[in-house]
Length: 260
Image 1 (tube, rainbow, N blue to C red):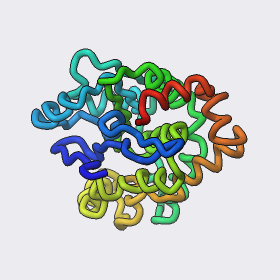
Image 2 (image 1 turned 60 degrees about the horizontal axis):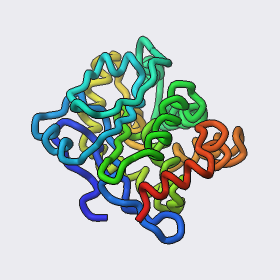
Image 3 (image 1 turned 135 degrees about the vertical axis):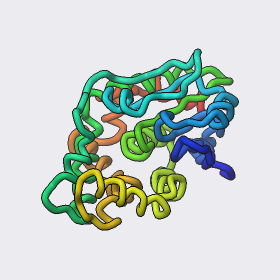
């Protein structure tokens, strides 16, 4: 699908994750499913562009301390906001990791894999993931939905993958969309600035590769989440049904709303 990535000024990683082929050769409708980072730095031009997308549901996966720290310049009135007040932290978990005496790129990747192992069962995410699917089942013809977290890549990436799976999107396409973060968020260009910012804040001298997993994604991160779900719940379908209350009837409603 052309123009999947929306180059906004102050919102990173904003893109349409529809358009893929789903169950029975039907295709996900474009302009119905969006994903992004947070909106705390959204420009007036960003807000005007987003306002044209008829987004009526926003699943904000940030912790309450993140929502307070980043702020929000969107959504506009009339948007149903889904979020959880569980899981408050004093410092972001990855900052606590970076405060270690020593860290390297491989240790950072392993930290991310550990996070992806437990993330699908975090109560705050389970609550908001469940509400997301409830709203997709009742989405009107002219309404769109958006999911975001801080960077729009990890918590958001897992939920987008689950949404794609529920709609019958092939595994290769699920990973293609997931890995698009690295391009949409311009990870390579942002790494030097991120390295300088975090090293100054933490009084460290880490190289770029320590920070890459916190700006971008790797296929194995999502593979780890899927493996964790399959080990703990038996399958993605069982997890959707038993953990997120997405039974066959709800899945059919979602498919009717989002497939063409």
